[in-house]
Length: 229
Image (cartoon, rainbow, N blue to C red; front, side, top):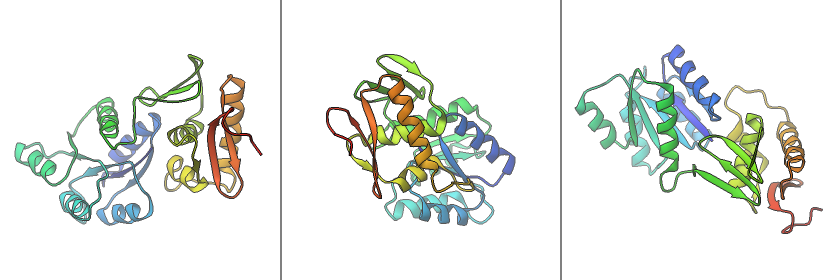
């Protein structure tokens, strides 16, 4: 899952970004409202974390413009504004949740996951495909009820494939979900992750596999439903 963080305090932004990435999220961090708009025009985010006190605009102005344009991306407001009126304005302007600074990283992670579990959100508690189950909260994969260890980016690939099991997932969609801005991505990075994931699933006894459709993308299916070419 890919998040956009709009926060102008560099050290604080790095703290939030690092904490969320340790929990399996891909995070793009920008420090102005204008940069946030540019990022939104480039990437379809699963959720946005928005500071209100930005150097070039008030975060509420951004939020209202997004909602007026019909953008329903979940937005969690981060701010030091602790008045009741401030919280009410934030929520009435289209915010989905409101978290005061300072806060514990564990609470931020829990609130983001709660937003993504809401109806229409991308986060379900457990998703399954064949004998593979993925607990999206614990970021834990089990095959035949046995937990297996999967590196973060391979886990991101598996999550996207499981969410669209039986359907083709284009390569660029996987790149968008597992890499943030500023990350060096080689032309075969996704292929490498898919190849390692395929071997890992087979070695653990999964009855699903990842199929490559050349020039199109990747598809996760149970062995009985598709004969690989």
